[in-house]
Length: 271
Ligand SMILES: [Zn+2]
Ligand SMILES: [Zn+2]
Image (cartoon, rainbow, N blue to C red):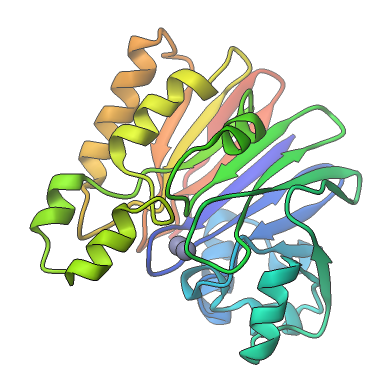
């Protein structure tokens, strides 16, 4: 069985925990150490079960708690070489660090982890495609301006797909954010807009796919209910009523999903 605990996502903090037969680990630690512990308890996965934290990139909404949290549980932080250098220069690197190179697959307790390069305004950002020895594939692609061929190939045909669905272009235009910020978000190194995420489902979802989560949804420039409806509608139109679909929230952990055989069960959160 594979458990996926969604602790939260958005520009104020991102983290998820994955527990397989071989290894329990987190992807990103963008909340304070205390908040991470609280949110992990809510999804029923204890911090002392963790064996590693994988980091996508250095932005605070992903790295905020990584040093304190990794140090308090003596966990190694897995980061790309550019990200690790950046964190070292900013005094935010934990004691135990394992450096990887973008697009070079590595092994972690029998899991094959592929950190694929993404287009984002960070020094050395990646998404992750994870393959368990039981053949479960988990694709995580958030914080990316465009879905290029490298990303598509990496997360195509996943059992679990976590994809960014950041903003509604009209809401972004009408927001009172500075013009430069608007251009950054909408640019090729920014974030993925609703239509890109929804249309990508046609390319990425396959008969193997059991769970799709839209993440990193902007609270200011998007709407959770709207995102939930367009994602569900698209999957239904594709005849994929069987795929479990939800939207990752910022303020509360979404909960835990459990994959066993062909089934995916939502276990909620104990908030
Ligand atoms: Zn982010
Ligand atoms: Zn970012």
